[in-house]
Amino acid sequence: MPGWMRALGVAMALVAASAAGMGWAVGGPGYDPGVRPLVETTETLLAVADGYIYSAVPDVGIGGSERLPVAYGAGWGNAIGLIRFDLSSLPRGGRIVMATLRLTAATEVGPQNQGLKIHIAPGPWTEDDLTWERFGGATGDLAGQIQVTGRSDQTYSVEVTGLVDEWYKGVQQNYGLMVTQLDNLSQDYVVRVWARESGPGRGPQLVISYDAPPTPTPSVAQTATPTATPFIAAPTATPTATPLPTATPRPAGPTKVYLPAMLKQNRGR
Image (cartoon, rainbow, N blue to C red):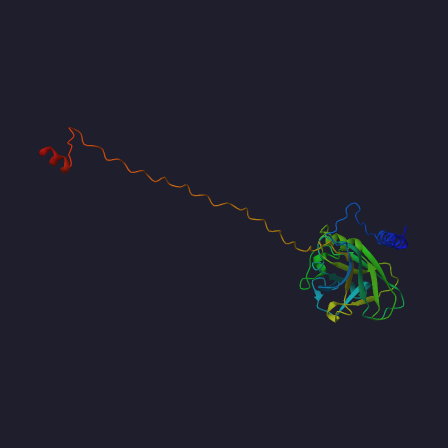
């Protein structure tokens, strides 16, 4: 075999191996050359609403504050923060890979580690109608937990992939999140986190990694081959027969014969 043919075979084998290693099922089952593969994308969503409620004043809620206090058993009562994100910017038909809630501390943490619990908000709310009475101090299912053990402006994260996936698929209504404090602390502490009014760099964030839905690859438009117009011969005109002259019929009755004048003269002699 010539050397150039061996080199070509090795090159083709390397290309095939690379495609297999990168997951390209070229020509394999389910392969569609007209569809792009899933591409993982990460998007950071900022809170669209937040506020807090507290038991000391059950008929008053606070929306629009720069800080969200979270407390359990503090001298002035229990406090719960509420946060909501809007997922409508995510394309439909994809898949949530990872979702992480980020909260940034707005005050110095006390001598004891502070545990924050992330719950599902049990019902709809807006910043204008937040009250302790409305929720009766109730919280939804637990979605995660954060240990707050640092200085002010330190950011803490907790994974909430399962919950966000249910919001994304419409399995569960998106009423947002509740942030409460652990209820087994030996001392009373108040933890404050920055609200969305403090600015996009410090307010609550929801970092979502998702696989975008596959999109068809636009194909090059093909110019249709013109169809040949069939040749139709013009019909040949059929010649019209010229009618022959019609003989004039002879009159009926005795026929008179007129002799030439020369014969008349001969008879007279």
